[in-house]
Length: 327
Image (cartoon, rainbow, N blue to C red; front, side):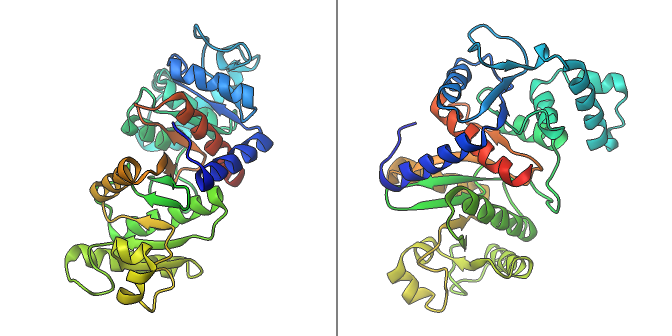
């Protein structure tokens, strides 16, 4: 991960300083991956978290805590098994079934987050997003009041810091789901950047310039956000240029407090969100941090399977910072 200058570096520096101050325990269930081992050594050197792995692996730094060697391993393992049964009563698993489920390292790690053995987890360098999300839902569960797991990316540029959602989980969110994504992404943005969120729900229409069922969905989602979070600065539907460019906003949406000043963009579907963040990253010179999973009761970070060790370090730092708001 190449670090940009200016605002990008200052944002990452602030996240790093916060993580170092918290010194959270973060679990890495894919510790056989050389990139994860390199990241574990880096977080030890930087003091950005206390790394924990499930079992001993060749190449692991000596200072890394190993769950299977913990003096109270049996106690925590049994707590994890009971938590699995509590969180998934519809599965009707027996004790033996639950024990078999704990052979899945992602699920066991998520359960250890849930029961408080660690403060957060980072996975996905080997596993797919679907596998990471499934482990999070089964092992951690949804946050109070949440009905949806979604994701966002922190987009860092020299002169601007933004959050894009959802770019990795929900292909065709409903109006209700889009509202949830908007609220969670705004909250993530404020926690990680200390900026007041200004949320634009993106469309190919700006405040009635076009009519289509997809536009109606965005309008309905905006109304739901305004009803649920009346203090949140939100506007929709807005085209991207109206959301970002003051001159365009003055022409297309002169009455909007968000238009031209948005720092959180909510896309109407996964195709547009995923494409947007990759275009801005590859052609616009932004650094994309994420995906950051939202809606779970505890921090549970997903990685791209093409990630570098630096990406894993940043994910661990973000998990640490987010744990300060959930634990």
